[in-house]
Length: 157
Image (cartoon, rainbow, N blue to C red; front, side, top):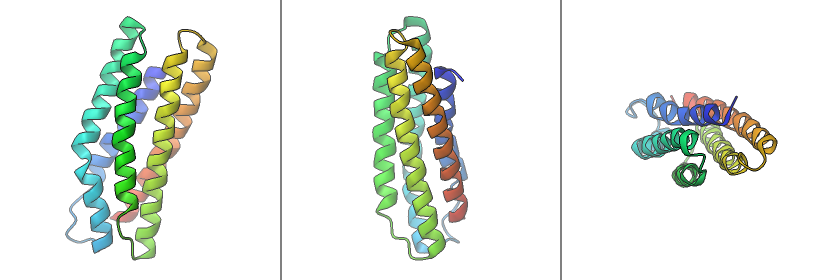
């Protein structure tokens, strides 16, 4: 998978988070606070991920990684803020503790994957082979993070 495909894969995080969080009314208070924390970041994640995708498209035309790395940096800051907010939410029941842990670890994997992706975009012009390795590592991390996020969100239902 290429660098642009990796960007598309990791951008699906926004859709996963925004669409899988349902109503909070029937959940326990701690699960509800985690859902509310995730839901409150929905629009910010969508905007940040949209910027990453559009910057990746612009990169294909200009071959200048500055726009992509800036967009990825902004997305990382949004995801890191969400990670901190979720980590601070109370989790009383064991199921909710496990869910919170999975969501936090999943977000962390996605963040590290994004950082690897930014490295890949920066290296693509000078070291294409190193960029492919970094993009592959980013894909693996993002996929693992996405899976863990999905599992954590399912535990919150």
